[in-house]
Image 1 (cartoon, rainbow, N blue to C red):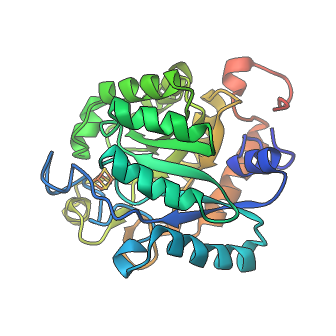
Image 2: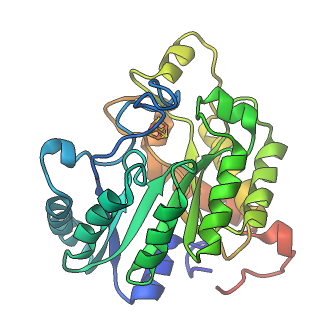
Length: 313
Ligand code: SF4
């Protein structure tokens, strides 16, 4: 485990793996999503503002390589980063033919100092030919597949209009893992109607699935979304800051210590966020999580291992 955190951070893993400061650069591949283009639905998930998430470089007329060159300059100045990972974040980045995908990721790979790719997608957008190509790519570069699992409960997936069930996530993780890919699961903590016990059962289920990383989200209410309408009508209860931090600590305590924590909170973006506004102060939320683990004298995986000290990873 990291020297300064009570959980296993992805940033420390990058330092261990590459021996230098590595930063992710969000890249927009210009793809879309079956939950938006009419294949499954046109409205998307209730929290989706219609832009997926991440940067919108292609829509600003920049190529993949152009976005990475721009991002490298910013990351060098801001974080003194030496190497970079192309983070295909917006929409569903495997929702295209293998040839299209190959072209996009090869373009990223060819940019100097880009040492890896992270590909975010939906679990139902992973046909075998795409996985076969990702397996091939993973032999050439440091690759992570990020899967939007969001919840293990079908009633929650129905509530957020995800348009796939949990069985689709299990199938995607199993097929990706059987090809040796690193898998990071995105999950939302505190979806309305999920009890604390159910959230903790989700950590245990992720342990069983054998994922390698996790990215935790809270439910953000963004302007122009169906969730905003529901929130406006008083139909959605959101967690407060202390409640979220406590739930994150409980979740971490139930998670296998080797699972890398890619993210514990997000801010949803200043311009369009309606609630919860406390999430804008991301560092305060992270500090609160650190302080709570310290106060409890607990760490990632303690409830599984019953270890008496923080494990070395
Ligand atoms: S899967 Fe992603 S891009 Fe598609 S509707 Fe849901 S949040 Fe939006």
